[in-house]
Length: 337
Ligand SMILES: *Cc1c(COP(=O)(O)O)cnc(C)c1O
Image 1 (spheres, rainbow, N blue to C red):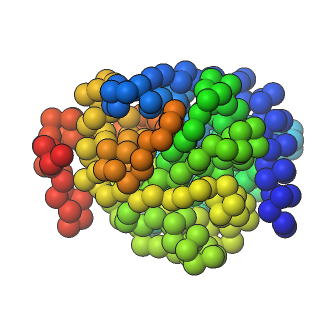
Image 2: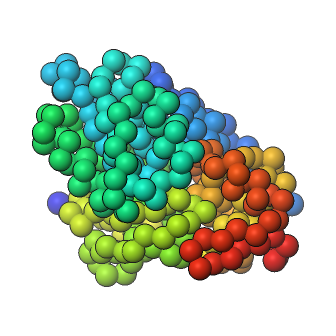
């Protein structure tokens, strides 16, 4: 598969997804942030989506594309939480049976949210890769269709509709900062934005521990990384050793990948709350963390995607009150910056 083909294939998927995703997902606002006093930073508010994250776009697109026979047999997925919740919501709306496989690293808040959506939940294994193996088994044994969390044309197409909206809402965009894990969000959105406004600088942001896409881009092939507890738990997990789309898209469409520390994410979450009064996951604060730490220089109108709100309330209140949090061997605390 040559790169031009992948980008064109996914752009076609985005155009098609535009006709489907709004059956369930919302078009979201883009608003000015108070984090930078010069008004240069805007936030794309995906955390206001039904199910609390942008994942509802890809999930809706994938579910609406199923054949009647596939709907009968149901769907299965592995997830760090948000894809599972989104897919469960979309599947339930259409009366499709769904199983969600989660590792034991997924925070309890997210496990409960997925269960509450009516999905059958299997929590097993200590990594995303383990959860994927369980999901593959379920698919084999039940005939259910596996809907991947990111490396899938329909999922990429759904997430890419965010890029279409951003180009319309912010025609003068200079830089776009995208939280980056498996690259479904970054790959889809960058396909749309680089097609419609090629001059846009697009930067993927990951946490510095277990940054699978970053390591894979450096190695030139998918590599497995250890998975750690993170404030940005939605960014955990590998990119899949048989990655077909997202590595190629990130390699060709991202101008840069920047890594932020857990302390920088902590500070970003706190800023986002105290300046903009937004309750969001650590995964959403990585763009703000990259700016506040000076790792990304703002050179013109800049946007970042506030990708989800499914945060653990206890941990969140610790962050915004500047309390100490211990993650593995790291201690994070307020008032550092
Ligand atoms: C899934 C997710 C991401 C990362 O998306 P990828 O497509 O895996 O790169 C970022 N933020 C939130 C809240 C997510 O749920």
